[in-house]
Length: 448
Ligand code: TYD
Ligand code: MG
Image 1 (spheres, rainbow, N blue to C red):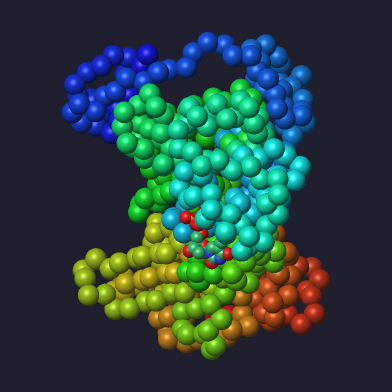
Image 2: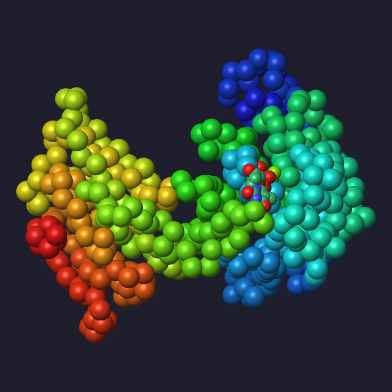
């Protein structure tokens, strides 16, 4: 037996009246802890589970990881190539983001080859069936269960032996051993732990759906993220037609890949060539707007970056970024003041990455600074211009990775003029494009 605080999820070995972690009174409850060695048995071909043998790392065959395709390429891309047997994936997102839709769509395809069980505690089976018909997914093989008791779900697992199971959603699930209401920290944690244990033991893939709160954390915040192997998040873009799927934690792959989907009347559709969906397409563009070529995971993405510089009403001018780190903006403005000869100390500066994209690489530096210059001077940067490049503290423009591929992508979308780091200028400049290589910030500003 163990004890857990229902408010914050802290563990205790004995009962007490107040939780020392969160100071809540009378929130500590007894829980049953599973112990004992259960024999690993595998449901999935090729899954060897975990054994207690000591082996040297070189003996471990890395090919032992088999991957199961989800049926959607964009989904697999974010997972790092597909589902890994015995892993637990947390899919989080706002209500209405399309979590249930994407899972029904992908798993209906996977179900033609695998045993898939979809457990829904939120919607009735009739609702799910109606939606599945409407979006025309093959539902023939998909097994459904409307249940919220984890004990009962695990019993059904024993008989159905699913290879992939969906829990929609963890906030409505409950363990009979806990008295608290579903959705609380203790319940979420206990349910997730019970499901994870079974997943690891049997080599079953468990997909847990979790709603996020206003501050974008999954209820029962850290507890869930620590338990699962992979955490992916489905979020809407500003243009509400599109959805971005990205991994925030992945034990089996990189976390920098994003998957893009469009929400249509017939469910979610993959966006195979997404590079231009983050352009604002305002014609003609206003001052402060400049197109940057980002690199997301393994592909280029054209993103509109907008800067707005206005006279500050405060002694302490504001620097705000949507999709960009504030410290980076402050640093770039300092470099602009010292090496570009343009001070923004009397101005508030706002930077926005169009479409709700989050920029995690430095290639947007040049776009931010040139956007600011364009906004201060109130001049428009021609719509056929694109830029990318990192800016150093001494005003130097540094090359970024995949320069040539970025240029080719922009060329494909009709851009005709580039301001890029000198070292990123290709030896053979493609036809129909003028490339200005710059090595100092002052040169880049002059090139505008
Ligand atoms: P849903 O998958 O139920 O969201 P979640 O499980 O994340 O809460 O998706 C619901 C939203 O998606 C709803 O607002 C309507 C929209 N939608 C469409 O636009 N087209 C469709 O074909 C489907 C199934 C949903
Ligand atoms: Mg749902």
